[in-house]
Amino acid sequence: MSLDKILSISGKPGLYQIVAQTRNGFVAESLIDKKKVAVNIHNNISVLSEIAVYTLTEELPLREVFKKIKDKENGQPTSISHKDSKDTLEEYFFSVLSDYDEDRVYASDIKKIIQWYNLLQQHDMLSALDEEEAAVTEEEE
Image (tube, rainbow, N blue to C red; front, side, top):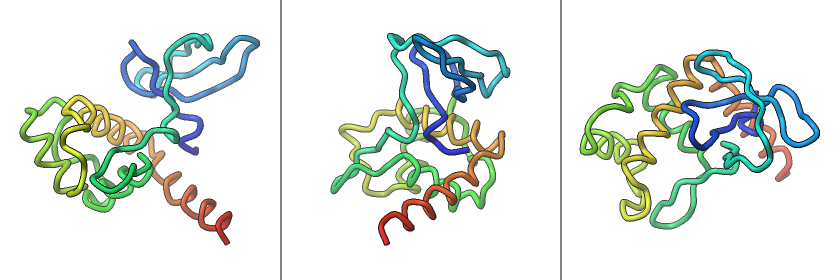
């Protein structure tokens, strides 16, 4: 499962997986409770493959950030919760991505990234990160 099919929908908790396309949007299934929702094209959605994190030198794709967390945690859930304090979240994120831009990456962003990583890990979807990297490498050759 590629990150192209995983969404964050504004106003709705967790992540969603695209199940089917409709005439004016699509049907998505929640990774949390497996409920299906109709998503209109006017909803504010973010496709995970399109999200990047600001660093001091570049914008790092979310896929790369997830891979860094996966490497740090050996493929396990994060050692902290997305509900931990702002300082704990920032300290953890600094250990994962030491050059992230502290002025443009907020604690709420870190909270979402950790929550999303744990959801993907829980549903065994992190293997898609390695597959996507292989596909990107092949395209560049």
